Image (cartoon, rainbow, N blue to C red; front, side):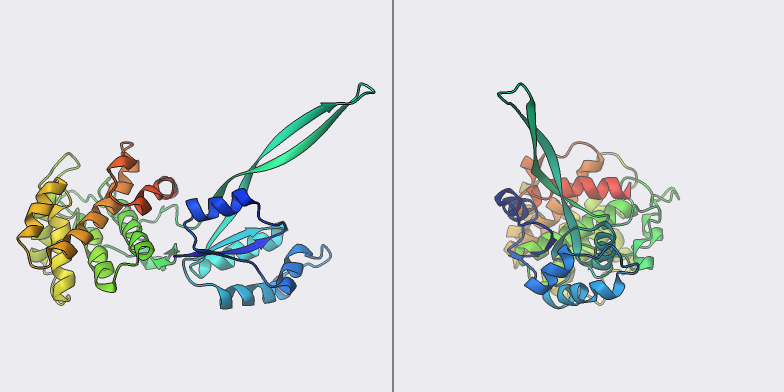
Length: 318
């Protein structure tokens, strides 16, 4: 599970600590050493270029964090901008605390009014961490989001039988990459083994390439699996990865019971279901683009906790 690295001018409140663990899913909150904290809290206003001044801060972050960790970055404007950008380039996820100002008025004996303002934490908001996807070809630019290098599914996979290039459709490249990212993040949070992560990788890239239109189509999963085989996209893969990915693609568009019945007839059916259920949650999270996501239908608590992030990704990439 990710950690929260802290670069903040104040002590975290209990509300902020609770929100970090519940909404970000962090395992541990890591405070900077006292020397780093002093540097961050006392950025000199006279200094023009902060690169040298902030070098020890970057060095600490680089040695103490890992890709996918969150970094609470909030302080002097220029320093915050530099560190947030540095984090994004290295697969870290910079966030800041949003607050609501609440006023309390007290009438004094002399008739005057004393006003006190209190700032209450509302949520953690991410700095722009992913492309707004004006360019749908994410992989070509080596973009990193939530610690993962985004894939680059070929647009020709999305050419439909009537010749339409559906790469820009609601089931095209943008949807594919978002589902891929949801799957990889969920697999990481759940501690899934590497072969399952690879199966989820392949399933996300393949799951809609057999579509003939954007309507309701329970059989598009089986057509997508057939197209994978027809194009030879499955060749060279580890057998375990290949079978799980094709199973997930075939049954992701069908009711859960249908997949469960099919798994009972397969060797390793329980593991196939593990991949299928997680993949269906990854795909389901991107139903935010259709406006009909019901979190109650998601199968994992980690997926239900990711609904707000699914909206953010769709808004950033749409």
